Image (cartoon, rainbow, N blue to C red; front, side):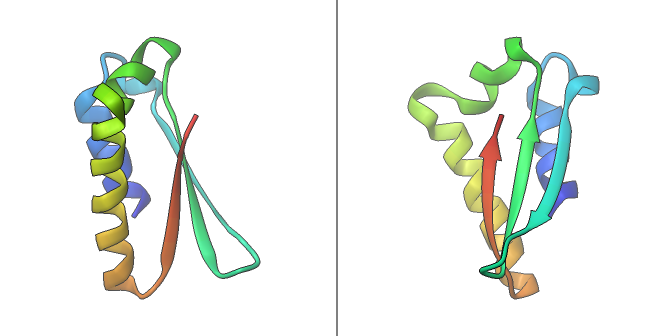
Length: 76
């Protein structure tokens, strides 16, 4: 799942080298994916009214369902 999020983010931003994706497992069994991008690229990742961020979250959740886990995507 982190590979998918990283691929999508690097395709969108101006500085793909600044994209960093990490994963941590929470106690409740949920996997938390943290997407960190450059300050100038946050607007591009979030999109107008958060539509692009929501689309990335949806794609990540679909990939997670195929693996049988729940995820939470946080954009930093």
